[in-house]
Length: 77
Image 1 (cartoon, rainbow, N blue to C red):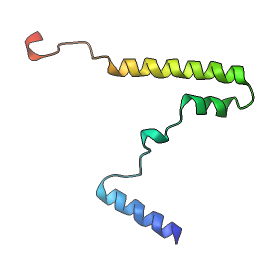
Image 2 (image 1 turned 180 degrees about the vertical axis):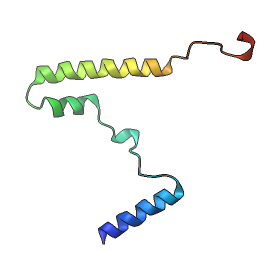
Image 3 (image 1 turned 60 degrees about the vertical axis):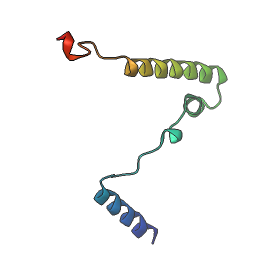
Image 4 (image 1 turned 45 degrees about the horizontal axis):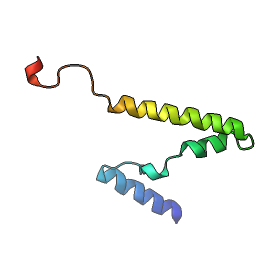
């Protein structure tokens, strides 16, 4: 029964054009959760991993927000 319900939901999703369900941003793993999974018993290693994770996240966010080099409007061409 559950298998049929999942199959019907998947087919309806494909017909609607949404495909597989996408996780919301709230469902994504935080740096703290990732560090706890990677180093469940070692607090100092967990803290170091969490610090590196946050630094990588911030640098990726800064790179995503940085505008591309080049002309900003047609007058710059």
